[in-house]
Length: 488
Ligand SMILES: C[S@@+](CC[C@H](N)C(=O)[O-])C[C@H]1O[C@@H](n2cnc3c(N)ncnc32)[C@H](O)[C@@H]1O
Image (tube, rainbow, N blue to C red; front, side, top):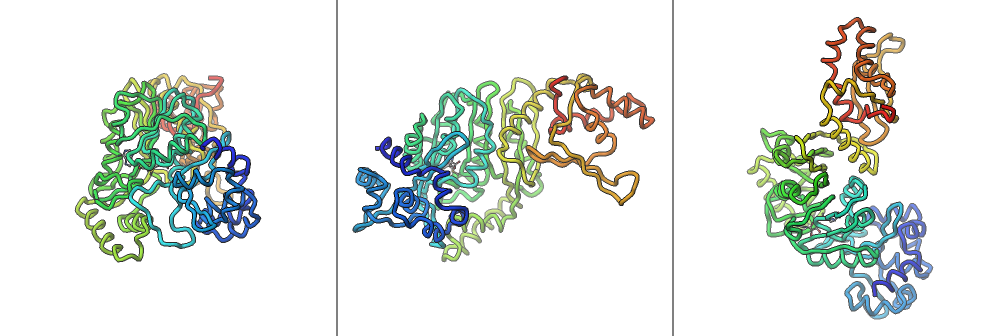
């Protein structure tokens, strides 16, 4: 049945690009806001593609004859499988089958239907299997796509990360605690003709003794009291940010040497404890380099509102009571705010390098190549003493630009900022020495030679300048403003 369905979807042109073209930008964007009216207006022909778009993304009822034309000999099996439901002469979807693509592949993702289309009340069951969400896309874009041997998608849901992994991993294991998610991931994988070893169980239980070159997880990270009213796609059943702590601390035992674990996460900002200390404590002694980036922070009230609305509770009798209970729990736990971001861990056989930082600004997507580069730079710096660093020939990364600010006509700028156009798109305020250093790094002279030339230009002692600036050189390399020169 799956092979026939794949053929029917392909024949109808029911691909990501095909659907986007049929809907057009207006209806496509409206659908991303959960509005179907422009999409319904764009799909009135009754041809197979219109029918499939109406059936799945738009969740409309379609005529049985149209469904039979779009899905030849498939309507009955799909009714039996619980993917479709018939009512009189009409058919509608009970499960979503949505085209999905990267630059090189067309897939379909099977999940539960999107709740709340056109303002309908959001009603989700505890076992709801989420389709591709903004968080799924964040993780997919963040993932380093180098070829690897074995990869794990922990908390696979609809199987979207597993699809991506299968494109660059020799073998993929996908796990979940939700039997419905496991079933949907199997369906997603089969439709995409992708081999995924789907396993049932919590966290790393289903992969005891297994090691992976790459582990990715978009876990149920919502920071909440361990409650009985749990939506399994977002609530782990563990209190606070414990699920992320467990995931991160258990991961290294399942990584091959050099193996990587990339996790989306929320973490608590507790009174009197900087978030970097809390998350840093989890990373201590793991034997992994770690790069942790906090992208957003929400205060307790905004956080509770976000997730109660996500569950469709806004305006219901339970809302006020749940809001109050959640806030009271935050108070008890001294939770002042919740951070949202990601962690990239890499198993190393030397003293690990940890970097935890905030970067709430726009970044280049996909970010995966920058994550890989960051790790390479960390590796280089870990293997290079200060003395050796000064002997390297470095180059300013090609996308770095310099902004200067000051009074019109003034001789010296008040501020110099180096800005990256790519990767994290960092901005770094520098003084004239750092600006001069970066400007002169073109792979020709060593860092030490450039600092010596700057010292003589500024009338300073060369040894002192070298000693004072070596730390800044490390930071400039860590942050990607300076990179090893191909010539060096
Ligand atoms: C936010 S969804 C992510 C789904 C998908 N990987 C994605 O990126 O869109 C989290 C998934 O973790 C699963 N999950 C919840 N608790 C888990 C646990 N203890 N161990 C493994 N998976 C769990 C949920 O069933 C859900 O499918």
